[in-house]
Length: 328
Ligand SMILES: C[S@@+](CC[C@H](N)C(=O)[O-])C[C@H]1O[C@@H](n2cnc3c(N)ncnc32)[C@H](O)[C@@H]1O
Image 1 (cartoon, rainbow, N blue to C red):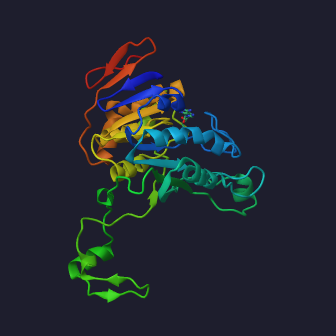
Image 2 (spheres, rainbow, N blue to C red):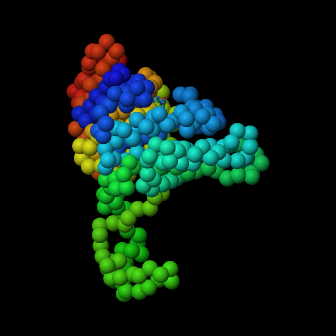
Image 3 (tube, rainbow, N blue to C red):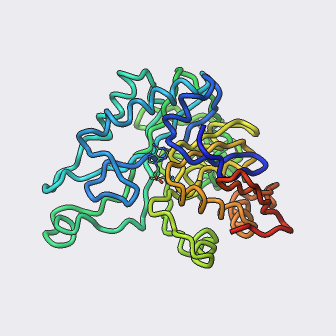
């Protein structure tokens, strides 16, 4: 079942091909699979990417395993970036083909599509955007929330956002029942204070965390920063929306293990798989003191319970806890 690279109070990081790992997992055992697999990019990332033409064929075996290991109440949240067609100013349709195959062939249902707006995205491809100026910056990525039944576990009261100033005024003043030109009936209930507004399906967050402790700690210890992280805000939103404390959250393409670190800070069990040994090992830095405190602070929690056990290939363990130092 692969090499266990480290473990914490709530989770485990493995290094292996996630397809092989999932094939050995029990059916219906995971509450949420939240992941960002390598995209079908024209410009290859250093960890390799399937081509646009082969992408669906490449991903479907993983999708079948993910469907098998999800509980009937569970969800798959798939972050997938768009791509340009090589040599032309046209967009690839690969992620739409993937979505259709996931639903038509594998049997997933589309619970809802989301968009991740990354304001810090670089303008590219240079030829179309910067030189000929015939396209604009591509600054959103798709997030498909899929489920195996019509009614996956979800509660939007766990992800409420602050009311707008206008809404705060309405709550104080109260609203008189009216009918909007759109046909919506607005009743007095509309101005009840329910603790916050229901968020939309747009997640706005840069992933250029230049000041984050993860980046700082990686630089200080000479570890390479993973080239394709998603921001902590992305797993945070879906873990809160779709799971309860102690539920199991899995990221089969875990990279720098953003998912595991956020799951731990929110009191969820987690399981992360990464095929690249260096990425898997280096991701342990997210559980070192300063970094985990940073994530916990963002979640409004005190320091998460943590003590990381780093495991090396010989099966020897070293503890990284409040009083211990990591073995190199
Ligand atoms: C887009 S990155 C994920 C980044 C991650 N969301 C984060 O925030 O750091 C995709 C990762 O999947 C890994 N990967 C590719 N094929 C894999 C496989 N078959 N099993 C496990 N990991 C794989 C790559 O090495 C890469 O680190």
